[in-house]
Length: 375
Image (tube, rainbow, N blue to C red; front, side, top):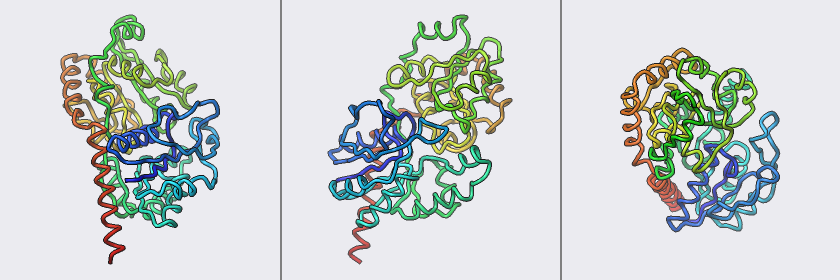
């Protein structure tokens, strides 16, 4: 099968869309298919696409004002030319919003089936950044995804959200986790002594430092005696958070084996953002054998078994986050049991397993298109 993956983000970008697009391309290659990636050009000096498993066509881009880590593609003929040259059987649109919309239009013009993967809660971002615009965001989402042969939602909550807002032909497709890279035996006592020299309980957050992530909800945990908060990531809220989280250790952006070692060295992982359509870092913490505290909203509802692998708390509630951390800090046996159960729960959620599910969705779409053409 020949597939063009049109994605709003791709490595060296570090985010859920980029990571999922990369894993999708890798799996297609591993299964003998022929993918091509079309993505915005990264920031100057980012280097070549040395880790890409397939050819990558880069579209000229500009940084998003106020959030330079996000690149927005400019109009270009390269996208349509890439589709014509690659002759795909199907176009995969990863979190379509700007480049993906153009990819959808080009696929429709060429008569190529399209699968759209919903990954970003644009309506939630509109509320966070503009205080309004949620209805307009949903109109945009509905317009884009209604043109696809199938929309894939990463979680039950996202699927319900899409259907309630009038998006047709939605199916569930979760995300995988690298259970070889992220594993409990990477726990590093030397790193733990470096991060918490007085033997404190280490509570970690990993992700973008941006307003929608609401990382300031960890302030109460910072104030708990015997607790050290560690923050991994970068973004426009960095300066604000260094003031909002006194005593926290900020490690900046970490990737690969370094990130896996940090995950395994945590005692508790806390995710604070209420707008996650999936939440990959929760799975990575679970694969690392770490109990999780996350909001009872969006993707974490499918991932965290409350009272068995961690705690789901009311969104945007700093007191609930603090209470959950305090409870886990006081119960080392419970932390151990939750962490072991978390690892067991995700062991079957490999990228190979969910990649095969994706190919099955492709096959369904292609079969339906052939039937429609024959009719």
